[in-house]
Amino acid sequence: MSRKILVLDTTLRDGEQVPGAKLNLYEKLELAHQLKALNVDIIEAGFPASSQGDFNAVKEIVASIGKDRTITALARAVKNDIDAVYQSIKYAKNPLIHIVLGTSSVHVEKKFNRSKDEVLEMGVSAVKYAKTLLPDVQYSTEDASRSDFEYLWKTIEAVVKAGATMINIPDTVGYAVPEEFGELVKKINYRLKNMNDKVILSVHCHNDTGLATANTLIAIKNGADKIECTINGLGERAGNAALEEVVMGLKLRAEYYNAYTNIVTKEICKASRLVSNLTGLDIQVNKAITGDNAFAHSSGIHQDGLLKSRDVYEVISPEDVGVENMEIILTARSGHHAFKSAAEKIGCKFKDDESFEYLFNKFLELADVKKEVYDHDIYYLIEKYSNEKALANNAGNQFEGIDLYELISFQVVSNDIFPTATVKMKKGKEIIINSSVGDGPIDALYSAIKNIVGLDIDLKEYKINSMSRGKEALGRVSIRIGYNNQKIYSARAMDTDVIKASALAFINGINSIILEN
Ligand code: KIV
Ligand code: ZN
Image (cartoon, rainbow, N blue to C red; front, top):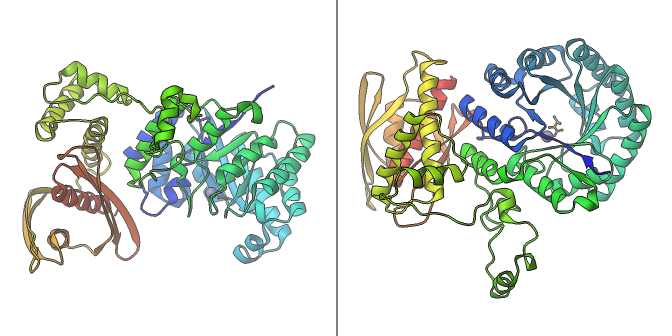
């Protein structure tokens, strides 16, 4: 009988650990809703002990979607972390405490500087304590793939006896190779199921040598009941196993694996674009399943074959992952109905008539400038609108009394001797103007903005992309800025005027710094 594989998505925890991929509360909630639409079984919402912001975000996610979804959050094997997880997830319908502790010699000796028995005891005590709070506890044997097998098994046996209901085998540093990892999972599964067949066996693979998807799939073949992954493979270093790859790989070869997931695959493309848009991290064009070229056929021989029958060169149909073939191009003459159906086709829902009218007018303004409006434009228009609303709510509720910067106007002169910029900005009731020169127009622009805000910030990365086709395409500027030589913040903005988008992205980043600090 085909086995159901549980899918845990950790984009909001492992994914969000990526420098610069930090999301604000509203972005996290938006992503959590999309994960729900994808129908992932478990959402790892964060690492609550890491900061008050993370704690609050996990709580909000639970309040928003925790009634019909299992929510977990990460804790080290210490009381404070476990308490923070419990306090943040306790109102979910199925809360799950996730404890992580290393089992490899490098972790035991170098990270903890303790004996193996002492570390094992820490893990057992942590599980026992977590069990006094909630019935479901997952234990992750960090760096399992580099651990001595007998010590790894001794740990698993002890934590299961202490009450762990899920055992997660992480390939923390992407060291595993498929054949060996499959054997490891098979051996653990055999012993585990003999010991207690109710305990769920899970894997969590990193992609340091590009094997995360392969290792996850081989683990399923060898008995894993649950997989952990992220959208677009986001995560520490080279990232985690990409949800879209594992899920579609399994779906394509369901008979070979004799397993399936309950993921709503038509939501994959939307989830992937959303994560890319929220984090500012682009998707590689040839990325499996969700890259722009994943379903593009360029060679004449391939095109000829496809025209005869799609299955000649296509094993996955684009519609299955939510990639629409037919794009309707809108213009300023497109009416309410055309705009609504184009927006709904790419998965946007309107909260009420007022939001719809507001967006329709924004669409008309854009169509006047751009002439042709594509799916991408509508998507970003809606994203931009939601972000503006979120920021207003942010300022209005959580951060009452904090004034944020707004751009009023700017002028940039580009030449090869003295590029200059003058910027007029507003903060609360104060209007501030500054002019500056720079090595180029963006440098001059950013220098004037920096003079106005007076914060110790420096630009680490600047990227500009065209978001759609046509001469008047929307430009999206993504930046990363360092604050006080410590933290990195990322921000984005878009506009048909790329200089304005550059200024807005920088100001968005500055406002994030202000809100967080
Ligand atoms: O990579 C890892 O080991 C982890 C654990 C917390 C599961 O992220
Ligand atoms: Zn990880």
